Amino acid sequence: MNKLLILAGSWVLVGAIASVNIIAKLFFLMHWPFSASLINSSNTILLISLALLVVLLMVIKGKPKTNKPASTFYIVLGVISALLVFTTIAGLLFKIMHWAGWSVILILSLSSWAIVIPAFCIKKAIDTLSKEKLSGNEL
Image 1 (cartoon, helix red, strand yellow):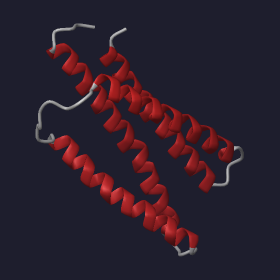
Image 2: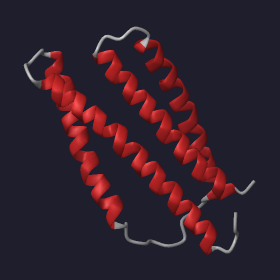
Image 3: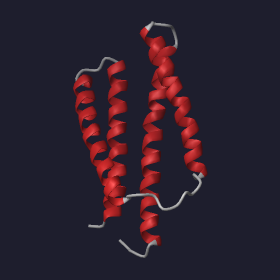
Image 4: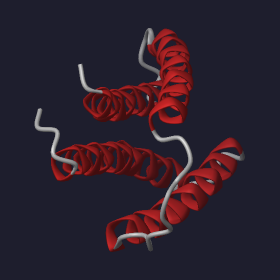
């Protein structure tokens, strides 16, 4: 099997596991049963898959050859991610202090992460597959 196809599939896998993890945390906020078990298992699987992805990236990519500017998609996604990080951390802090209204903000920010992370992973997989086609190695 082609290395870049494996890399694209692993990006999609990490995005799916991260979505399950975020949804499990939303279930935990709503006090659903077995949500803590789902969080623990998805955290474990996510850490293992990220470690394998880092090793795979080191093996496949090696040293970067060019310094291309980032695409607009990644710049916009970075700004959205920075805002979501701030909103999620602020929501967690104020939720711990039991301030009114921050539960909704926390749920909205965590739900947004469930969209942003798979979007990044799918875009990364598409970029990897397009590099594969440009290099002349058809799937």
